[in-house]
Image (cartoon, rainbow, N blue to C red; front, side, top):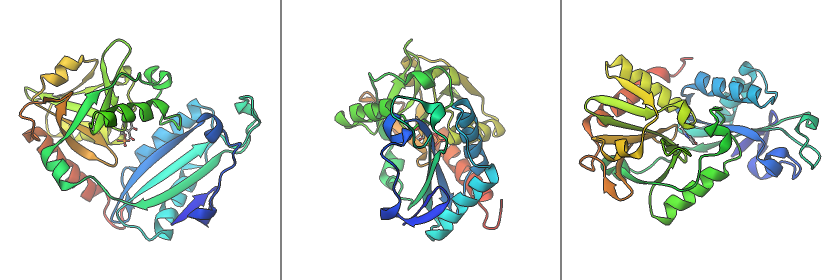
Length: 289
Ligand SMILES: Cc1ncc(COP(=O)(O)O)c(C=O)c1O
């Protein structure tokens, strides 16, 4: 694979970042994962908006939007990929040890691509399991900043906790005990015809997929409630699912070993999956934007 490092394409084994890069030293930076369908990047604008807002919150200079669009598309083309994931990583760059972010003058930008290998059909058919983890949500995101930060340690710890219990996903709660999100996904559930999902106040990363789903559900006439919810709401839901760029909508069948609803993908989830697939087809037309 070819990797784009600061605008230059290099074979992956030659794409190297300094050991003094603040991304490596302090997790000081941001990333985005983007999904490509039939050679077209899905929801590119939303990803670039999130990156740009987060970068300005961190006072991290980034290349222009058109430059980033060009580099992302070039990475896809250079690797001759159609169904793919692109990973953009942006760090503060090389600096002196001793935490002096303002002295780092040149951010490091890496764009890597890989062929998309999603979850199995069986997982989508049966749904997956989740557990509520003890690991806290990281302070930066619980404060409400929509940062897809390179500092992913809490997410790694949540993942380890989930894996130790053989669960597919670990669900964070806030300090006050409200549901937040998964280690790499947002969370939705449905009860009595209403779709619910934790709001920004619950320390979530506002997922691009989550926003698309909320839009599709509202367009279809379903009420969507964003707010602060106790785990009880999810335990008592009729159906639930996780969302992310890589998963799209993944039905959630159990929480802490307890079935959610029938423990099978429910009708609302299935309808939203179909609407999502239709939206992907419409928004990634070859030759389209
Ligand atoms: C913590 C977290 N929440 C939510 C998401 C879903 O975001 P998106 O739909 O933009 O992929 C991700 C994706 O990686 C994530 O890491």
